[in-house]
Structure formats: structure tokens, C-alpha cells
Length: 435
Image (cartoon, rainbow, N blue to C red):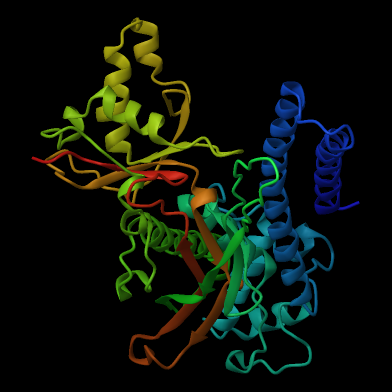
């Protein structure tokens, strides 16, 4: 039984329990008891959590299937990892992007074959399934397959570095444009008199449109790629590409204003309406001036939607100069606790996630949105179109004896739960006071 099947069975069990209580009340012509209502609410909350787990499991299984379906030949070490890597090749330092030396070495051989046009590396790729046996050695003709370990390393690191991708709802996109259903409003209950006609109400649904944007990295490497350094080279390239993608995703998701700078994406800062904004007191325009009441107001204003998991999203500068400052001022510290520092990043009982894309200046930030509080997975959907695509070209920087490398991914971000002019949604913007 797969993980998704297991979760679906759990959801079905929760639904069956809730329906049984509802059916019993109808059969006995009565309202739900207080205990039954509490049990039903608990089942709904558990179902919301399971739905998130199901989305995550579906994403993982879909991604795994996509990788397997696009790999005509698996990358295998013909005599084991030790035999596949020459004894002369040494790893210098700890790998940060790859799980093992062979994945890094295979990715390095891929770079040598495509970037450095090395015949020996090309043959190694062919022998180990990185070169499709039905194609020629021409990279532009699609002969080379990006090693699974290389693509996976970039994807994994992108998700490790990217705060927005880690916390938003990620939806696999099978097409360039995908519509995701969204509940807009539910039924309305009306009082009705004896022998009077009831008032009808309908649940309404809308759609979230995900339109894949292309994000590209264009760089160049020297053709003189030595064999004994290719493990470190692959590790470095994977790290840098993943980090570059993650930076852009975070900037678009948190700060996007709909312009070409952010690929047309409107992020949290510009999407949330007035009802989903908490503003500090007038004059509190620096981190050192923020008061406890500001954060207390945010916690009090956030609606308690079933299954909501609130988190603070702030820059490291705000965390230490506002949150930790206020926590220290509350007292109860001693030398040991001050030296140890905060145990886990949290504030007022809620986790703190540090976001480098958010404002960090210690000077005045009057009327600036500096952070967010709430459940990002409820508020925003991130569409992921496909994996990583890598192509090289030896002609662009011919005079420098360098090779151009182009790495692309396609994704979209839509913030759809933005609140109203007076009512808050599942995530709030934290706005500094006026000067």
C-alpha cells in the first residue's frame, strides 16, 4: 500500500465516523449533542491535517514518477561505486549537494562531457546510462540525459534553501497552465418559522490559475575541467544553481509586485488586503521600537481556521532586535540561559522561520511590511511545472575558451487567500508604524 492510499483510507475513516454521527442525529430527529459536535470538529481538524499530508505525498510520488518516466536508462555503477570512480579521483572536503560520491562523480562526468566536450567523459556517460544509446553525442540534439543525482541535488537544495517552497502548498503542474479548485464560500444557515419556506444557499467555488513562468540561470565555465576536481565542481554547480533559484522564488513569493522583475508574480506583500494587515503603533518605525502589543495584536487577529498552523516569517534582524529583545525584557533569564540563547526559533508559542528576502535594515522602515504571521500553505499555492533543464553551448564564449551553461525551471506562485478590506485571511502582513 502506498503512502497516498494509506492517507486516503484514513480520510475515509474520519469521514465515515463523522457521517455516522450525523446520520444518527437525523434518524433520531435531533440536533448533535455537545459531545458529538466536539467529536465532529475534531474529525474535521484531523482531516485538514491529513489533506495536507496527502498533498505532500502526492507531490513526492508525482515527482518520483516524472523522474523515472523520463529516464530511459538508469545510471548504474557497472562494478559498484568504488569501481566506477577511478582511484586517482579524490573528494576534497564534505559534499553539500550530493548524498554520495558516485552521484557527484556522475554529475561531474556529465559536465565534462557536455561543457568540456571531453571524449573520455562522453564515453563514460554512455557506458553508465547518462548518454542515451539511441542518440548521437550531440548535446543540442538531446543526446545527454541530466544525471538523476544532479537534478535531484538541485531540487533538494532548492527546497532546503527556499523558505517559500518549503511552506507554501506546492502543486505539480502537468501542463503549462493549470487550474486548481478553491472553496470560496460555504452554505448559510437561516432561521425559519413554522410552516414557512426555507431560504436556499449554495456553496461557491473558484479556481486558482497557475501559469508557469520560466526562470533561467545563464553562466559559463572553463573548458579545462580536470578529472580530479569534477566531484567538487558538480557539488559547487548544484549548490549555486539551487541557491539562485531559491532566492528568486522567495523574493517573488514574499515581495513580488507583478512586474517583470518578479516574473509577473504578485507576492504576499502586495497581495494581502487591509483586513489581513497588522500595523505597529505610530512612531514604531524601527525594530528596536516595536512593542509586544504589536505581535500580540497579530496573534489575536489571525482567524482560527480548522487545521491552521501559524508561523512567524521575519528576517533575522527583526527576530533578534525585536522578538528576542522583548523576550529578554520579560525577565527570568540567568547567565546560563543568556549564554545558551533561544532554544529553537519561536516567539509567543509559534515557530519563527527566518526569511532573507524580507527587510533587514536597522534604520527607519516606516509603513513597510517587514514580515508575516499565519499559515502560508493555506494562503498561497506554488505550481511546479517540471524538473531542472540544463543545456550547454560552446560557441557563445568561444574567444574566452569557456562554455555557456543554461539552467531553467518553470513555476508559478499565486496568493489566493488575501482577506478583505476588513476581514483577515489565513496569513497576516506585519507592517511598521508611521515615522
